[in-house]
Amino acid sequence: MDLTVGQIARLAGVSVRTLHHYDELGLVQPAGRTPAGYRLYDRGGVRRLQEVLFFRELGFGLDEIRELMEEPEYQRRTALQRQRSLLEAQAHRTAAMIEAIERALDAEEEGEEMTDEELLGVFGDFDPAAYEQEAQERWGDTAQYRQSATRTAAYSADDWETISAEVGGIYQEFVQLLEAGVDPSDETAAAAVDRHREHISRWYYECTPEIHAGLGHMYVADERFTRTIDATADGLAAYLSAAIAARYRS
Image 1 (cartoon, rainbow, N blue to C red):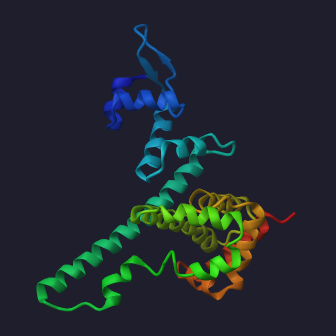
Image 2 (image 1 turned 45 degrees about the vertical axis):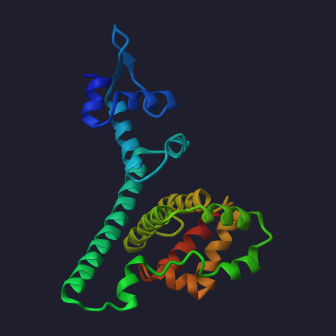
Image 3 (image 1 turned 90 degrees about the vertical axis):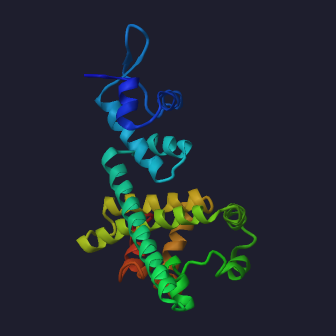
């Protein structure tokens, strides 16, 4: 049985006005209307609303969600798998933060002095400015560098947290493929490569296939990148590089 806009709003914990807005944006549209003109949602609408709300919980903006869901290759199963990976990465990050807070509270109560590593280690070894000078020397004259510099300069700590969680989720997809023995040229690996490139384009600069292929080579050619990527799983850098190369092999 179709649900009225009020019923689906109560189930989802959102306002009727929010559902009206989603309808206007073309995100979640009703299957029909009652004789009185109220929106009615069928099973497909409920499933689509679920996907939108998952994306919203992950911090995606409505315009981003609409672009993702309008992609020709968009599939519900793939979207749910991606959302699961992102949430797993966030859960891992949250658990680590809670553990760090517990250690800090214990140290405060016992009057102990924590080392610098203990105080800041939980925030990871990613430093957006770590290679800034080198990057400027190598790519400073490119449009991509200028675009990345402009975007990242405006990012908040929350933005970097979101970026870290998103790329962590993508890496976990590759780890699952690697551990399952999936060939890097498989279509599932190619789909993960596309999501990796979309992540770069969304947060840093417009990443063309040519640029992405170059990055894939650098992941194994530069030991710093290899070491950072392999911190997630041994062999991940090589697998990611091979998957990127296979994706663009003519």
